[in-house]
Length: 244
Image (cartoon, rainbow, N blue to C red):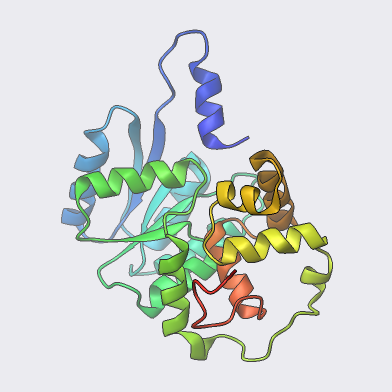
């Protein structure tokens, strides 16, 4: 059950929906203050903690289990990418949903953050409405990045990706033919509704196939899925938008 479904369940019986809990991690006090103000201004969001470095962010996230952690990529002690990797690989049973924030668009730190398991990234000059929208998107279990943006990111760092296609990798061999179809269509930037129409199946079937793909490949977001597809030669670099 997704976080949004949990909140809907909690709201049954006429009670108010449970707020989305948010943890903020940034080493700059002014930035934390700005993030705090944006979150506290929204009735459906609740700030549960703040951290000034990566180690504190990991400790608080594991203890408080927020719905969303807003994580600065560049922090002292333990950088944001390493903190993200620790949280997304933890065995606590809590699905850490992380929104990475950075000063620079599409730098190598953002690329590594996405590979580490972040659900997306946002620039620090984003407006307050953009920030709260991003938090809500990530809390709902969706990726913030449009697939086209992810592809541009991957195209820029093509030299960092494996050059040889690994279509016979065990992970891919474990997918059914339909699961692989869904994977490739998602990697080409198609939303579930369009994939359902193209495959002539119900949207719920696409969601089910996608859940199986995530489980079999050990992925947690559509962003990671797109990266996996590029790394394994399922989508050609520079070939965005060419899928029939």
